[in-house]
Length: 63
Image (cartoon, rainbow, N blue to C red; front, side, top):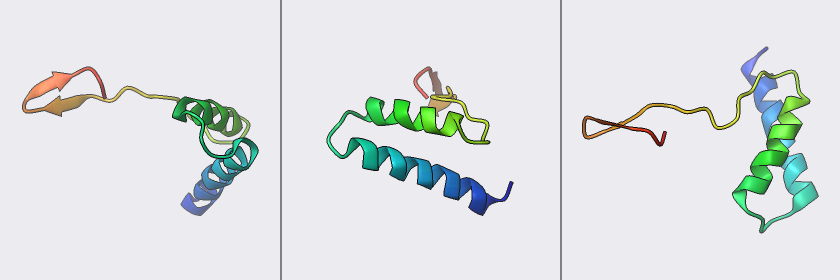
């Protein structure tokens, strides 16, 4: 799949969620709805994937 197609799916899904919910909700509400929309798409997605974070040579478990 081309980058433009992926971008179109992601932005389209985000706009759909925003139009349905409107402004003012917590980020977690938008995240859940966007996750739902992207699960319906042909994209393979993972929500809140943990990534290593190293700060001043210390590995933190918050990434």
